[in-house]
Length: 206
Image (spheres, rainbow, N blue to C red):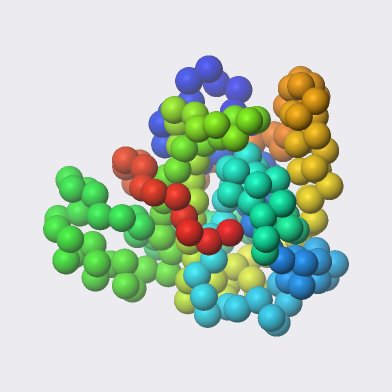
């Protein structure tokens, strides 16, 4: 996780390499297990619906309840091409209208209808999944972006449900030092960031 005492309020932090970025999603076993086995999303994965990706492991844990929520039992770490994420961010619109950022609501709505990606900032989470005073990026992909994510940008897919359970067990036992040591090393991502605006409500999809 970010080691700064006071990270910027809006900043993309992720586990990343020079060419890839890891994001997280959680699915029911019928989709999650084949995806992890084959390293790509199965045909059953609907490429025409919006999908939300999260660079923050702990925000994903908050969303899926450490992999215990129905339909989110398999937690996936999806390593994607860095240039693909950059394209999505460059073509994204904010998920909610923000006065002072958009000229007016009508302009925002027109942009949102045609944008292949949408940006949302939600409170980052600590090991107990409590909100922190800075934000975590959620990126919604639809249309062209969703298809490219599944079929072009994905480099690898790993089932990290065992890791989620191990960290959760350490948190429950009070071994916070061990839990923190197991977390993916998420550091600021050197990519052009989407507009840093006031946070919107949490994304609705896992």
